[in-house]
Length: 113
Length: 112
Image (tube, rainbow over all chains, first blue to last red; front, top):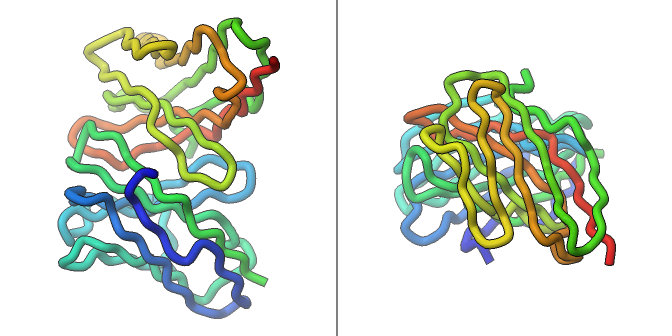
């Protein structure tokens, strides 16, 4: 158990809809990261937050947004969903901003129909 | 833009033998490298890391080697065990950052 909690585990929704994925980091970790893993592909970095502030941005679409709240949990919002957004979305946390292993949750599997 | 590449999608080895997983990177600014292991229906689990000031780091049966001039790292597992069967990802990040870039993964199968 990594200590990182992601909800929900599975999500099935229709094209055009909006969903929110939730992540609670390990106790004491200030950094939260979001990654997307499409079928048989590696993990694509989306965005990182540190203590509530956006720290780094990767290949995140404009239809996607995220935030980290004062209690350090984070939400990833995906809107105007397309079939190609179907993927596993992982949240990870780390204690420091650099040279610190990421600890991953078990992911949210999103299926867009 | 694949900055981290794992060119072997799969690897099969016999129990007790050595498993060698390879990873190449293109970004010379990377200075922190990690290996993760992933089982089905779980998130990746951190395995071992190495910073660019070293060329080798060992933790039990796992050793990571870094060749900066070749922009290449490898993970050696000796001896391999059936429980090591999983997908292995290498990852890298730049100095001062922690937004890691991951390879596509190599599926290791260790046969009894």
